[in-house]
Length: 107
Length: 116
Image (cartoon, rainbow over all chains, first blue to last red; front, top):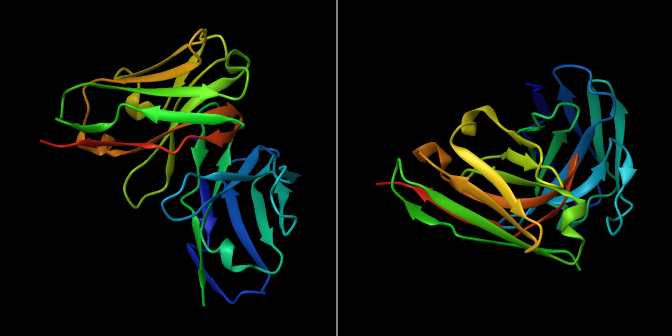
Protein backbone atom coordinates (compact mmCIF):
# COMPACT_ATOMS: atom_id res chain seq x y z
CA UNK A 1 0.00 0.00 0.00
CA UNK A 2 1.04 3.58 -0.62
CA UNK A 3 1.66 5.33 2.69
CA UNK A 4 1.04 9.06 2.97
CA UNK A 5 2.90 10.90 5.73
CA UNK A 6 1.54 14.31 6.72
CA UNK A 7 3.53 16.86 8.65
CA UNK A 8 3.37 18.49 11.02
CA UNK A 9 0.74 16.63 13.03
CA UNK A 10 -0.34 19.92 14.58
CA UNK A 11 0.29 23.46 13.39
CA UNK A 12 -0.44 26.41 15.66
CA UNK A 13 -0.88 29.71 13.85
CA UNK A 14 -2.35 33.17 14.27
CA UNK A 15 -5.20 34.25 11.97
CA UNK A 16 -3.74 36.15 9.04
CA UNK A 17 -0.60 34.03 8.81
CA UNK A 18 0.06 31.96 5.71
CA UNK A 19 0.83 28.26 6.14
CA UNK A 20 2.03 25.20 4.25
CA UNK A 21 1.01 21.64 5.08
CA UNK A 22 3.07 18.74 3.80
CA UNK A 23 2.10 15.30 2.48
CA UNK A 24 4.80 12.83 1.43
CA UNK A 25 4.07 9.59 -0.44
CA UNK A 26 6.02 6.37 0.05
CA UNK A 27 6.46 6.07 -3.73
CA UNK A 28 6.00 8.32 -6.71
CA UNK A 29 2.32 8.96 -7.42
CA UNK A 30 2.56 11.62 -10.14
CA UNK A 31 -0.09 14.21 -9.21
CA UNK A 32 -2.70 11.75 -7.91
CA UNK A 33 -3.13 13.51 -4.57
CA UNK A 34 -6.24 15.23 -3.22
CA UNK A 35 -6.80 17.41 -0.15
CA UNK A 36 -9.74 17.55 2.25
CA UNK A 37 -10.78 19.73 5.17
CA UNK A 38 -12.71 18.27 8.08
CA UNK A 39 -14.18 20.53 10.71
CA UNK A 40 -15.18 19.14 14.08
CA UNK A 41 -18.24 16.87 13.86
CA UNK A 42 -18.63 17.46 10.12
CA UNK A 43 -18.07 15.42 6.98
CA UNK A 44 -14.86 16.00 5.03
CA UNK A 45 -14.89 18.55 2.21
CA UNK A 46 -12.81 18.33 -0.96
CA UNK A 47 -10.44 21.30 -1.30
CA UNK A 48 -7.99 20.44 -4.09
CA UNK A 49 -7.87 17.61 -6.63
CA UNK A 50 -4.90 16.23 -8.54
CA UNK A 51 -2.35 18.15 -6.51
CA UNK A 52 -3.19 21.64 -7.76
CA UNK A 53 -6.60 21.74 -9.40
CA UNK A 54 -9.09 24.04 -7.73
CA UNK A 55 -12.60 23.03 -6.70
CA UNK A 56 -15.67 25.15 -7.34
CA UNK A 57 -16.82 26.96 -4.21
CA UNK A 58 -13.52 26.64 -2.36
CA UNK A 59 -11.93 29.98 -1.39
CA UNK A 60 -8.96 31.00 -3.53
CA UNK A 61 -6.70 31.22 -0.48
CA UNK A 62 -6.38 27.41 -0.68
CA UNK A 63 -3.87 26.12 -3.22
CA UNK A 64 -1.93 22.94 -3.83
CA UNK A 65 1.38 22.02 -5.41
CA UNK A 66 3.78 19.16 -5.91
CA UNK A 67 4.31 15.99 -7.89
CA UNK A 68 6.04 12.65 -7.45
CA UNK A 69 6.34 12.12 -3.70
CA UNK A 70 6.13 15.60 -2.14
CA UNK A 71 2.97 17.67 -1.99
CA UNK A 72 1.94 20.87 -0.27
CA UNK A 73 -1.37 22.46 0.66
CA UNK A 74 -0.99 26.19 1.16
CA UNK A 75 -3.41 28.52 2.89
CA UNK A 76 -2.82 32.19 2.21
CA UNK A 77 -3.77 34.30 5.24
CA UNK A 78 -5.56 31.80 7.45
CA UNK A 79 -9.04 32.79 8.55
CA UNK A 80 -10.85 31.68 11.72
CA UNK A 81 -13.04 29.23 9.78
CA UNK A 82 -9.93 27.39 8.53
CA UNK A 83 -9.01 25.90 11.89
CA UNK A 84 -9.72 22.22 11.35
CA UNK A 85 -8.01 19.00 10.27
CA UNK A 86 -6.59 18.55 6.78
CA UNK A 87 -6.10 15.20 5.06
CA UNK A 88 -4.38 14.18 1.86
CA UNK A 89 -5.50 11.12 -0.15
CA UNK A 90 -3.94 9.26 -3.08
CA UNK A 91 -5.68 7.73 -6.07
CA UNK A 92 -2.57 6.42 -7.85
CA UNK A 93 -3.33 2.95 -6.50
CA UNK A 94 -6.84 1.49 -6.35
CA UNK A 95 -6.04 0.67 -2.72
CA UNK A 96 -6.87 4.24 -1.82
CA UNK A 97 -5.18 5.68 1.24
CA UNK A 98 -5.34 8.83 3.34
CA UNK A 99 -2.70 10.58 5.35
CA UNK A 100 -3.09 10.78 9.13
CA UNK A 101 -3.99 14.46 9.00
CA UNK A 102 -2.64 17.84 10.09
CA UNK A 103 -4.58 19.73 12.72
CA UNK A 104 -4.50 23.49 12.20
CA UNK A 105 -5.13 25.20 15.52
CA UNK A 106 -5.23 28.76 16.80
CA UNK A 107 -2.05 29.91 18.54
CA UNK B 1 -27.99 19.76 -5.25
CA UNK B 2 -26.11 16.54 -4.62
CA UNK B 3 -27.30 14.73 -1.50
CA UNK B 4 -26.08 11.50 0.07
CA UNK B 5 -28.02 10.24 3.08
CA UNK B 6 -26.79 7.22 5.01
CA UNK B 7 -28.91 5.01 7.24
CA UNK B 8 -28.77 1.70 9.06
CA UNK B 9 -26.14 2.26 11.73
CA UNK B 10 -26.32 1.50 15.43
CA UNK B 11 -25.07 -0.92 18.08
CA UNK B 12 -24.26 -4.49 17.05
CA UNK B 13 -22.56 -7.38 18.83
CA UNK B 14 -19.21 -8.75 17.66
CA UNK B 15 -19.62 -11.44 15.02
CA UNK B 16 -23.03 -10.18 13.92
CA UNK B 17 -24.02 -8.39 10.71
CA UNK B 18 -25.28 -4.95 9.74
CA UNK B 19 -26.28 -3.37 6.45
CA UNK B 20 -25.82 0.30 5.67
CA UNK B 21 -27.68 2.19 2.96
CA UNK B 22 -26.96 5.46 1.20
CA UNK B 23 -29.71 7.21 -0.74
CA UNK B 24 -28.36 9.47 -3.48
CA UNK B 25 -30.06 12.38 -5.23
CA UNK B 26 -29.20 15.44 -7.29
CA UNK B 27 -27.02 13.65 -9.85
CA UNK B 28 -27.20 10.76 -12.29
CA UNK B 29 -26.31 7.97 -9.87
CA UNK B 30 -25.55 5.31 -12.48
CA UNK B 31 -22.85 7.48 -14.07
CA UNK B 32 -20.56 7.46 -11.02
CA UNK B 33 -18.46 5.10 -8.97
CA UNK B 34 -19.38 5.18 -5.29
CA UNK B 35 -17.49 4.41 -2.10
CA UNK B 36 -17.61 3.95 1.65
CA UNK B 37 -15.06 5.69 3.87
CA UNK B 38 -14.89 5.20 7.62
CA UNK B 39 -13.50 7.10 10.58
CA UNK B 40 -12.96 5.47 13.96
CA UNK B 41 -13.60 7.71 16.98
CA UNK B 42 -10.93 10.42 17.23
CA UNK B 43 -9.03 8.83 14.33
CA UNK B 44 -8.36 9.62 10.67
CA UNK B 45 -10.15 8.67 7.48
CA UNK B 46 -9.91 5.18 5.98
CA UNK B 47 -11.19 4.11 2.59
CA UNK B 48 -13.32 0.95 2.93
CA UNK B 49 -14.65 -0.04 -0.50
CA UNK B 50 -15.53 1.24 -3.96
CA UNK B 51 -18.01 0.01 -6.56
CA UNK B 52 -17.97 0.95 -10.22
CA UNK B 53 -20.82 2.91 -11.79
CA UNK B 54 -22.46 -0.25 -13.15
CA UNK B 55 -21.64 -2.55 -10.25
CA UNK B 56 -19.35 -4.74 -12.32
CA UNK B 57 -16.21 -4.02 -10.30
CA UNK B 58 -15.61 -3.76 -6.58
CA UNK B 59 -12.52 -2.95 -4.51
CA UNK B 60 -11.92 -3.40 -0.78
CA UNK B 61 -9.31 -2.54 1.81
CA UNK B 62 -7.55 -5.66 3.05
CA UNK B 63 -9.03 -5.59 6.57
CA UNK B 64 -12.62 -5.93 5.30
CA UNK B 65 -12.09 -8.22 2.32
CA UNK B 66 -14.26 -11.30 2.67
CA UNK B 67 -16.38 -9.71 5.43
CA UNK B 68 -17.89 -6.61 3.79
CA UNK B 69 -19.78 -6.42 0.51
CA UNK B 70 -20.45 -3.19 -1.36
CA UNK B 71 -23.37 -3.16 -3.78
CA UNK B 72 -25.72 -0.75 -5.50
CA UNK B 73 -29.22 -0.54 -6.94
CA UNK B 74 -29.10 1.99 -9.76
CA UNK B 75 -32.88 1.88 -10.20
CA UNK B 76 -33.22 3.12 -6.62
CA UNK B 77 -30.10 5.37 -6.64
CA UNK B 78 -28.97 3.58 -3.52
CA UNK B 79 -25.59 2.31 -2.33
CA UNK B 80 -25.20 -0.45 0.25
CA UNK B 81 -22.57 -1.89 2.54
CA UNK B 82 -23.24 -5.35 3.97
CA UNK B 83 -20.97 -5.86 6.96
CA UNK B 84 -20.60 -9.43 8.27
CA UNK B 85 -18.47 -10.91 11.07
CA UNK B 86 -18.16 -7.49 12.65
CA UNK B 87 -15.26 -6.79 14.99
CA UNK B 88 -14.74 -4.16 17.65
CA UNK B 89 -12.18 -2.48 15.39
CA UNK B 90 -14.96 -1.87 12.81
CA UNK B 91 -16.48 0.69 15.20
CA UNK B 92 -16.54 3.94 13.25
CA UNK B 93 -18.59 6.54 11.45
CA UNK B 94 -19.20 5.31 7.91
CA UNK B 95 -19.49 7.87 5.13
CA UNK B 96 -20.93 7.29 1.70
CA UNK B 97 -19.08 9.28 -0.97
CA UNK B 98 -19.12 9.83 -4.70
CA UNK B 99 -15.82 8.53 -6.03
CA UNK B 100 -13.93 9.99 -8.98
CA UNK B 101 -10.46 9.06 -7.79
CA UNK B 102 -11.12 11.80 -5.29
CA UNK B 103 -14.25 11.88 -3.13
CA UNK B 104 -16.15 14.95 -4.19
CA UNK B 105 -19.41 14.59 -2.26
CA UNK B 106 -19.90 13.03 1.16
CA UNK B 107 -22.88 12.02 3.22
CA UNK B 108 -23.33 13.09 6.83
CA UNK B 109 -22.12 9.72 8.09
CA UNK B 110 -23.68 6.95 10.17
CA UNK B 111 -22.20 5.54 13.37
CA UNK B 112 -21.60 1.82 13.76
CA UNK B 113 -20.65 0.57 17.22
CA UNK B 114 -19.52 -3.04 17.59
CA UNK B 115 -19.71 -4.04 21.23
CA UNK B 116 -21.14 -6.73 23.47
